[in-house]
Image (cartoon, rainbow over all chains, first blue to last red; front, side, top):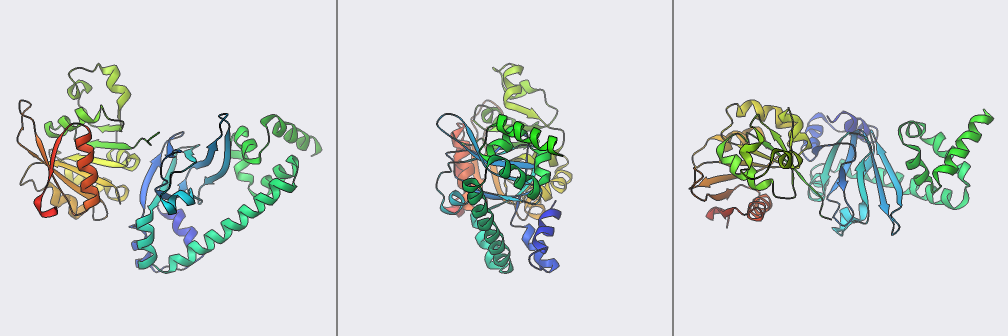
Length: 193
Length: 167
């Protein structure tokens, strides 16, 4: 149940076996079925969630009912509305399962307790948040300076697995383009090959 | 919209738990049921179709506990230790409610088997048969979990009081 999480942690820090056992005690295992919510807009994001298995999305819905994808999380990825999680404020986002998923969740209280009893985890999360900031910055720059085809090819290059798993309408939403534009781009790229 | 949470009910065939489940059905919670009792037992007024929309059957206590946010057990389960063993991995940090009676050894079994769960003992006082209104004594080491369970039971119309030791 904790295989992917421990593997992910071991890539950044080293925990002794007894520390790994202690680590597990802080997490809440949760199974979500496809389309079930982990977080609904207007509620507090109570958990930081690690995806052992499955696929989730974080998105908001605008006044016109359009969904805007902000993030996906598949095996080995974390997902959270960090502002709501840390402040206890109501979230403006939704997190739901695109596929049946197995999660390991940690509440803020348990997260803070874990930082005290396992100080090495502070380094792990610092590295995680650093990488997250860099990725968000790159995405922001890409959204400003790249055209639709460039955005798609960059995503295809950096995360080819997600192209295979996600419905095209969700990929289009994530890239900030229409499904029709995405279909046109994919057709053009296929013809170039 | 308040987010829907899931309660797994294990041992709902017991009379004590059935009284609670009957009221839980009317709440916004999603109920995952693990037992073989015909759905009619839980309501004298709802049709089976109504109940099937609120109650979902699941064949495995581990899967039910894994999906659930809250787990409700009855001390009337005959194979409690076997069930606890299956639940250990997936019940961590979840509220586990035991519907019991005074003197039941079941809560001690839970404390031994589920050290990382938030255990709440809900002892039924009076009303062991349907003619009397039961009152529920809430006990447990986690004050927040006790408060949550107390609020939950009150919200579905049940009478509760907390152990004086925890006031």
